[in-house]
Amino acid sequence: MKKVLIFSLILLVSTGIAFAKDYEINKKAGDYSVTVKIDRNPPVVGDNAISVEVQDAAGKFVTDAKVMIDYSMPAMPGMPPMNYKTTANLEGNEYKAVMNLSMSGPWNIAVKIKKGGKTSTAKFTVDAH
Image (cartoon, rainbow, N blue to C red; front, top):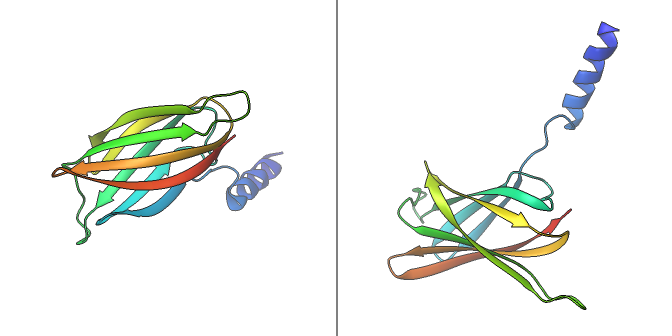
């Protein structure tokens, strides 16, 4: 029994079932390199923690910006569009927030970085399950 349990654990770890990887995407936003991580892959209906790393052209972390996360689902027949915003708070070198995706389907996400009177935006889409 012990050997079967150990074999099963090794099999789960080696196939990646035991440790799900975060959803991660790298984008450019103006002069910035932006790395976005969502704690669920794929994102799910409900709360999803999101973290954003912003680096300048020299590769230095930008920690003095205001980062907003806008997430929306386009209108569908019989349903108006859904639009939400949340402010990401700086923790170390990452800006962190929670998105509540209210239903399954495609969500448009815009990470807005405001610094020095200029706003740069990184856009991408996720499919919530």
